Structure formats: C-alpha cells, structure tokens
Image 1: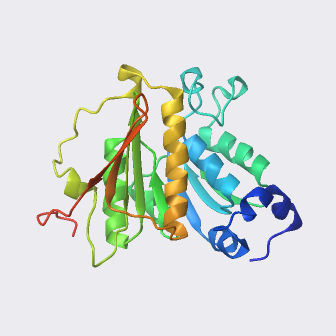
Image 2: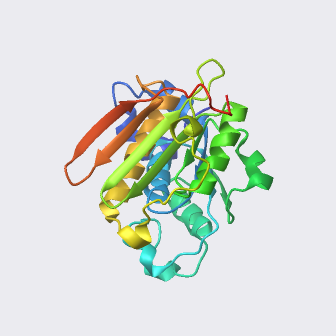
Length: 246
C-alpha cells in the first residue's frame, strides 16, 4: 500500500521513529479494527488509532449525544447534542485523515449483526456493558478473533487483550464464569473523571498497535490502572478448564 503525499505530511513525525518506519506504517494501514462503543473510552481510542495511521475502521454505537457525555467523550461538542454518536464520530475522524475508510453503524452490536466483525484484525470492546461484553466474547472466541476489552469507572481502568488462538484458550468466561449479570459500578452512579476515560482510550490504542505490529506485547494479562495513584498493575490470568467456550 503506497503512502500518499498527504499522508507523508500528516504522519511525518511518526515515520521518523526508529521502530516505526514506512514498512510498519504500511503494515498498520492494512489492518482492520472494529470499535464497539464510542463513549469516554471509544472516542480517544478512535482518535489515536486514526492519528496513528489506521485506515480501515468500523465503529458501532446506537446512542445519541447528551450533555452529560461532554466531560469525557472528546469527539463531540455542544453543537452535536441529539445527534448520533457514530455519525458525528466518523465526520470528526475523517477530518484528521480523509484517506481513511470508516464504516459507521448507528446501532449496537447484537446477535444478528455480529458478522460485521468477521474481517477484523482486532475487535476492541469499549461498550462497558456486561451483556454486550459476553456476546462479543463468545463470538470472538468461536471465530478466533483477537479481542481487547476495556472498562473504566471513577479513577480505575481495567483492560485485557485475549489472543483467542486455538492452542491457547483464555476468554472473559474464564475470568468471570458467573453467568448472572453482576452489580457493576456505573459512571452515572459512581461517577467518572474525563481524564480516566481519556487515558483508558489512549492506552488501549497503544495496546492494539503493539499487538498488531508485534511490538513485544504480552497478552492474556489483566492490566489495572489507578489514575489517582498513577499506578499500573499486571495480573497473570489462566484459562478455566471448565470454561464452556473452549
């Protein structure tokens, strides 16, 4: 894939990096990424992936923009209230790189549209919705598609990247085998700092890039970030031999 003159100028500062030459950039442009959820995590995540050179992006969100979104959902402004998130997000992202191919879907992921994810090099679940998380986990495990799952509330970030290879099973069900929906802390009850969501999106973007370009990325590890303490913890995970999805 040839780099256009416009892209050379847009990404010039990145292309002079020692570990990010034109070969790596071309490799990144060939990847297709799907993002589920364009909220506090999904907005900066999509922004930085496009800004890094991702050229094929699928974005999913069925919600409309509200004033309560504006403290952390950086793709939207006060003038976008009431409009569809995915429509506005696509417009803003193309403003950064008009050469990108962005498929925007004004609906949530459900059983009848999971096939839209089938060509993804990696699927990033930023939905923060337990039912959606389980649905995507089951699909990616069955199809052997890499899945990066992120959630955030208050000052805390949690993320894990499942490789979903046939010889090394580990999935969300292994870590959270209880099929009853848990009482998860929610942003509308516990609250959230905009910077926490922003940091989650940026770290997730880099983690996805590390995986796609094989930048010494260790996967199947649960990463916990405490933004107040500025601390990062890594927890080794292992498959559950009783997992019904293996």
